[in-house]
Length: 202
Ligand code: PRP
Ligand code: URA
Image (cartoon, rainbow, N blue to C red):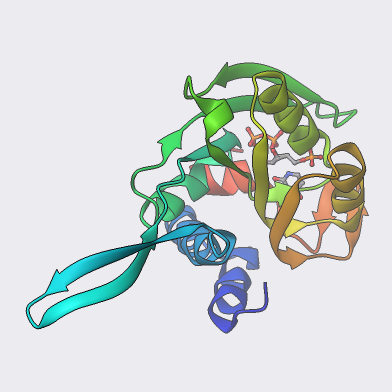
């Protein structure tokens, strides 16, 4: 996404000298700006409202229900930024970790709104590297009935985009930046380990 504010904020979180506090804040700010773009196709309905001066024919959101589903841990860092734009959204969680040697994802937790099949689902995770975690998270969502899914990340590797498009061709992918490549499972130039930078672990 080429918006100048998004690109500026990405430069801050890519910087290795940015501390945990600012990193967390700016990740949420980028997620907030991305939510604006991701919700661009939300359906509207025609309604009339009475202004102090008369009747206005206006449009309101048609009431489509949304679920934000972060992939743990790092996806949590994007949730508040999205909820500040879509406060009525429900939040599901999918726990996933990558094996440190093979980079294979492992699912450890799934808790979703009970009406997930009726909701537009925004799966959020800052990083799309090999694509393994995103593919498995979307498998888990589809298995539980979710039909209308978008994947929203900050930094994507070409390898991850290709793998996700192949596994789930029906999913729209939104990325703030498409980087050069993967190196030993990490995105280059990327921003390092998003979970560690968000939560101050290492
Ligand atoms: C990171 C990141 C993604 C995943 C991306 O999570 O947040 O979920 O790696 O990599 P992939 O596309 O190759 O699957 P990690 O497994 O490090 O867990 P964490 O969020 O708990 O740090
Ligand atoms: N997960 C991260 O947090 N960073 C990467 O570069 C790749 C996967």
